[in-house]
Length: 213
Picture 1 (spheres, rainbow, N blue to C red):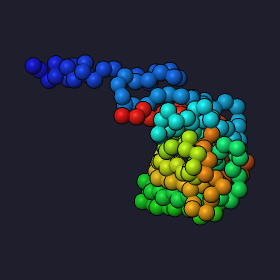
Picture 2: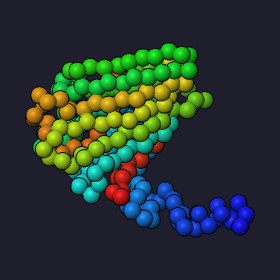
Picture 3: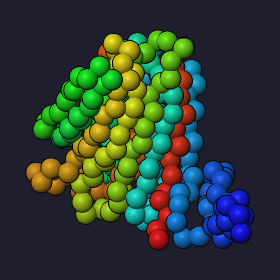
Picture 4: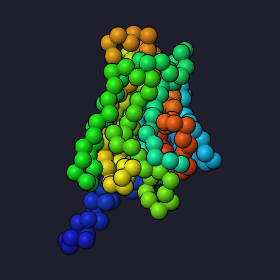
C-alpha cells in the first residue's frame, strides 16, 4: 500500500494514546497513569505532591513532569522528602549532585554531601518575566513505597538561567547515603521549595505512575 496506508495501519495496531484524566490509563501494559495534577495558584513558597496512597506499591517507578514553573525572582529549586512516621525531613541528611550546561557554552555544578535540601538546578533559574518559558523537566522517583531503603530521585530540568541563556541540568540526590539508616522508610510526599523566601507564580505539575511492562 501507500506510505499513508502503512502509517494508518501502524496507528491502528498501536491504538490511540491520550493524556486521560486522573486515574485513567493508556491501553496496553506500558505507559503512564496520571495520578495527581498541581496547578500553581496564588504565591506559595512551598507546595507538596504525592501521598502515602499515591506512592503505593502499584508502580515501581513514578514521575513528576512539570511545565512553565516560574518564580517571583531569580531562584534555585529545592526539594525535600516527606517520609512515613517521620514526616518532613528538614535535617542535614540529604546529598545531591546537579550538573548543567548553557547555550553560552558555560557549565556549572551544584553538589553537597551534607545538606538540608535537594537542589535540582545548577545555574540560577531566571524569574519575573511573563515573556519567557518557565522551568520544565521531570523528576523520576524509584520504589517510593519500599519501607526498607532510603530514597533518592533523579531527572533533568530545562530553563533559562539568570543570564537568560537556555540551560539544562541533570541531577540526582536524596537520603540514600549508607549512614542514613533512620530514613529507610516509605516516601509519602515531595515538598517543593526555593531559596530566599521567594514565591512560585505559575506552573503545572503532573504526577504519574509508570505502568509495569
